[in-house]
Structures are given as structure tokens and as C-alpha cells.
Length: 125
Image (cartoon, rainbow, N blue to C red; front, side):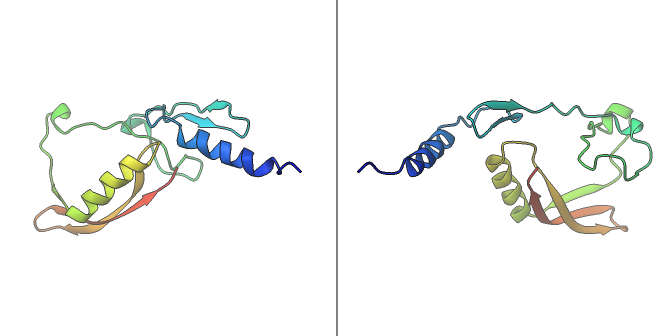
């Protein structure tokens, strides 16, 4: 009597997923039929175009980074990051196939203008 085909199909699917290249673009995903579904690439917006916060805005909007040197100013504060946070961020960035997102927590010292990052909370997108 032949064995059921269902366990074999699940095993084949897991082998296909293991064989996926780590270098695949972040916007691709493999559906149930094994076809790749493309997601729309997210384009960063300039900070000056954001306006005020409201509930209609996507909270995952990418914002373009602008350096203080580009606007001829000095950075008005310093940032210190715990080595544990750096390790967790590095680990998270190597495990995710999309943007590295999450929350950072820490302390702000108004006297020294120092932002100290003490905790990291990685998230999935």
C-alpha cells in the first residue's frame, strides 16, 4: 500500500524554503504555489514633507536621512549605545529579509545633551 503523499509535499516545501538564497531581494516572497509575489518598493520621503502626525499616516513611512553637515550645522547632541544593543541590532539585521525595524529605549540627559540607548526591541515587518 503506498504511503500518503501529504508528508512528502510538506517535506519538499521545507526543502525549497531552505534552498532559497539569502541574497534574494527583500521585496520578494514565495506564495503557496511556489510563485514569487513582488511587493511594491517603499520610497523614503523627505522629513519636511511629513507635516503633522495623524492617524491616516502609515506609521511605517520611511524618512530620508539628512546629515547635519548637509545643512551646515553641528549635531547638537551625542549618542552612546550599549554594546548589548549593538550586538542585538547586528544579530537582527542578519536574520531579517526586509528592513531592520524596532524600538530603542534609553535615557536623555539634558545637562550633557547625551542620548544613551540602553535597550532594543526588534520587530518584524
